[in-house]
Length: 289
Ligand SMILES: Cc1ncc(COP(=O)(O)O)c(C=O)c1O
Image (tube, rainbow, N blue to C red):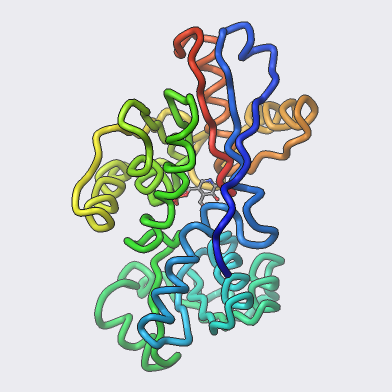
């Protein structure tokens, strides 16, 4: 696995943006790789390199039953020749047939380990990690979402690719904050980023700032997180959001991820309608998955 190409930046021809006098562009990180969605690709690649540098042949990571991150890690492992272990939240799942997402991860060679919810809450503690490594062997441990220092540094390339564009503002959706943390660090000094939280999680901004400190030694002040467009929280949608995504697909032929991208783009179109963006400005929306 290697990352050499930048993802495409496409002008979105949309009458609502035109009416607001705004150039709306899509950063198509979703096209970076066929099986490892964009933000995962940017985060996992440096983790694969880190595992190799430390002489480890296994990556062990965490996720919920429908985790994109587990599937992406399985794909990355298969492609790079590393073993992967996926620790899944909920030991009740162990006795049920695998859902399609976990079945795909398993088919790509990921060893699944179902963890009860009480232990899950302490999953990054030294005690739980020691047990996991004793059971599965030496491994690079990657947190949920792939958001560790290496992953965040990998996402800086996304910001650097956009630093050369005429965008004033870059929009991305936020799960753990890792993509935003890296992206913001790579932007040019005059550019700003806004992240739309896909879930209601109060410490998200602090955690994003902490990821920047971990990855770069300091936080940047060119980003903020908007928590007003979660549509009920993680994995939730509403008829309005689904309607928006369907309309977007009909207009532009792009299927938005309802958990993340549709929420951020819905917020952007509400902003266009409400005059939130300067006439004549360019706004980039990152499709990260
Ligand atoms: C499509 C999409 N956009 C954005 C994100 C947010 O990533 P992060 O966890 O780095 O905030 C994710 C996370 O999985 C995603 O799948």
